[in-house]
Length: 169
Image (cartoon, rainbow, N blue to C red; front, side, top):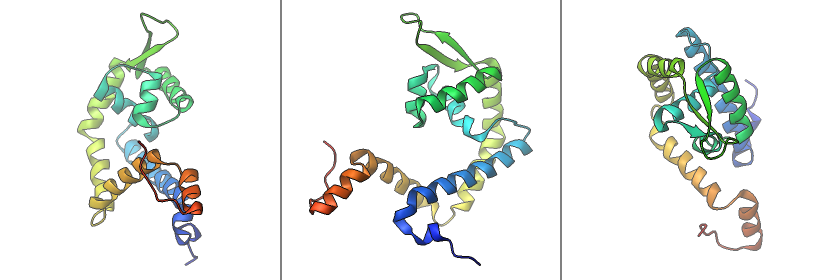
């Protein structure tokens, strides 16, 4: 078996390793979605779930809710709208601002997915994390918060100068 250099690099390549893991999870999720007859990219479901949970939102609010760039969200929304799953309306006070909500077909897809395929995906990922998952999700949340408190360049400067780490105020 060949060495896994990314794994061996530890924290140095953590971003690469997490991206690789995310791509693997999305690809395997896609297989489950297609087996259930859902021909939508797995990466689009967080947007549908966000609109289901929070109702109609602006593009910026969706991007913030899913933690993605606004241009990336806009591309996904364009595809979702072309597929008839979301609808866009101009905001009453500012016609430049679009409010995005689920279309009837999107509501139907989300409702069906919540009953059938989403629980299967959730269970399969939880099974893959078995024995480790209890600490994985809190650790990921802590890492996300930590990086919001201070970026890597700020941390590297602190470590170089010997300054103690402190949280953002």
